[in-house]
Length: 251
Image (tube, rainbow, N blue to C red; front, side, top):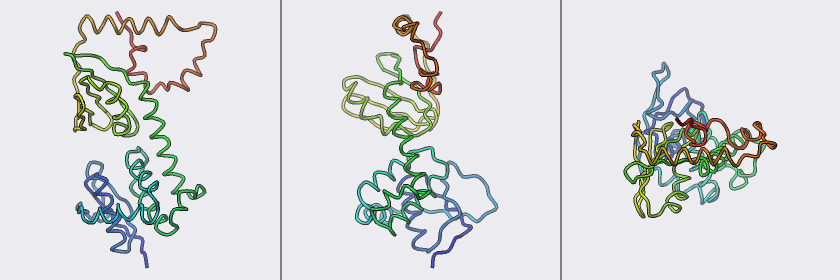
């Protein structure tokens, strides 16, 4: 019999670590009150159980997902892990419990609150990653393209392929200020690294010149009679304007 516990599972913040939490939940036949990463953990009066990442256990859980629920379910969960969904770990655990019970049909259970919440969060993740492929702006410093973003979701793994292919012969860095990480690329090789902060250098004369040109281009192609600020905000949310060259003021 499965029991609901007042335990809080604490894990290392990795996908494999979360899968170990799933393993522990099934092994102990309990549903924790919450699952929290070490980075997000705050002191609490509730009992805390630290779940150590064991790759043998995580591999067993991960390999069971496509076998019992389907490959699409595993891809969905990997994406869900990158979302900004509140208490995503608990939703992922409950999704898996439904999946192991109902099988592949869980993917179509849109009326279920847990399934719907996970699907909605992943849609938001994919939509944001799609937007940033168009909204991300680079500046050049010492022959390196550099960009900063503040996404709601952890989108770097989703946009990496796009920019690595588009700028295959360049050196570039994309810093995600929200999640304190960066995508670093040099020709035909990329990696994700922790990066808490990035101090941008003062742009040189050429950089300032081309920024100004881009701003002029953006303002010049506008058809005044068709200006629709509401439509612009809908298609280009203001959240992303902070790092977009065309919305900067130039001297």
